[in-house]
Length: 336
Ligand code: 2P0
Image (spheres, rainbow, N blue to C red):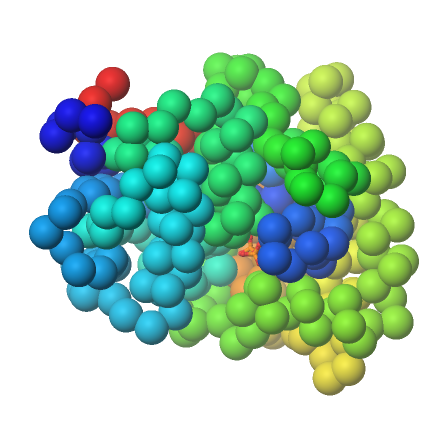
């Protein structure tokens, strides 16, 4: 391996699931219990540099300009161990990662983080993986990260094999396709605090204790099929309808866990009601929400500013953000 091949920098955008992932069928391989379908978002990205260096005695991580230890570092080390095993190297790495949006604010930073880490670390280790292999690797870091390797609409297949070989992400449209269709995702931030229950813990607890978990799982395949049909037909209303029901089914299963996992704040419900009112007023807008309290609304380019203005007027909404479809993860520095 040449010296230059030891370093690479990658960027990946975050994504929002329209058909949700919640629950695992294998925790060790991080295989999801359900497939999921997402939209990669423009303007919300993680940039990660990985440098393997014989002079390092252990992995080191800098996160948003601060040295990181504890769980973030151990997750990165566990992930790099997979890359090192695959590349047949033992070198430790310096990882420098920064988001251009708040970490752990419900905007799925682990998705962009592990997608960028997967791309940068494999390139720095001299590996050349195809998209399917890369998405399988990114999934080991975080399930939603598998989807952030691609732009536009992305389907992460559940797969059925125990080894996970048929669990991988696939782009449904070219980036340009999603852009040309003109969908938009409006994010209404309702809190600057860290979320209460991390996704991994929330979904495990839901699977273990919720009487509605099996019913939630049963919604997934029909919803994925309906979403794919809606995307193929460029039918925003059909896609929005599936988006909203998938989100609410996921949250219903979590809320029925014992004790309950509730991500909603008052502002989340107010935002949901505002989205319902927009539809009554003829605006195309459909609600979704992840493992945090922020309101997200699927709409189109022509109505995105109006949807954002109406969400901004909801009490306790701190700010809004209009996101266009984002591009695939990319190498920005390093050996080509
Ligand atoms: C999703 N979420 O499909 C769902 C909806 C949050 C709510 O994927 O345990 O951080 O690392 O695989 O990817 C967040 O879960 O979970 C997530 P792990 P991840 O976007």
